[in-house]
Image (cartoon, rainbow, N blue to C red; front, side):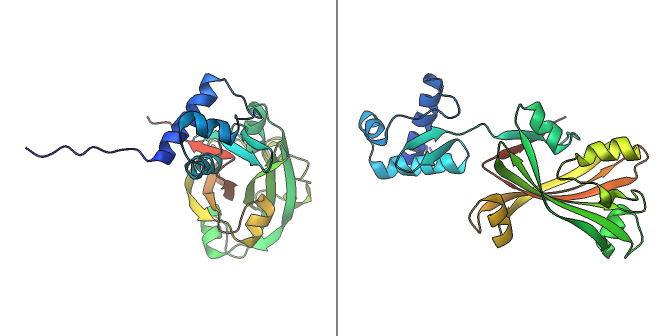
Length: 241
């Protein structure tokens, strides 16, 4: 008879589970402070190195935040976005009761490279409007987003102040756009120096990388999107059908 292998969880993982149970049992809310390190280590009979490794993992997952010399606190809930949802970033943030802020990084016209022209169904080197914004939620940088739109379809789009205005709102009200469908692809990337500075993370830190294309009712392309987002501030979900 083949012997059965017994797998034992690592001490760090056991402490992670204990902390998660503690948060549930004590009904800790975002901003609430956890009991002190010494108190929990004594109660759970674990060493501080193991405890700190567990806390570090929960911080990386966006469950806890640490304030040096103060303690560990329950982190604000991460934003949750469904990949099938065509709602604008601003709208889906506000629907979750959070405050959105758009910080304009750059905007302007550029000639369409071959790949971009193919995606947006325009001639190569034709004018493309590019809008780059830092999206902050409750004053915390969350996502750095680049959007490209064909100028021949949206003349004058570059004259709007998108630090103040919703891009989707302008497209719908001023250009009669109806968002109907889209495709998105998500993967992991690592922050370069510029992304790290803007998003408030360490260079080389993991980020969600999303690229997508949206269409109207006639399946005409509207926008080409690329974004990088902090993994501790947002999570993406899908619906199985």
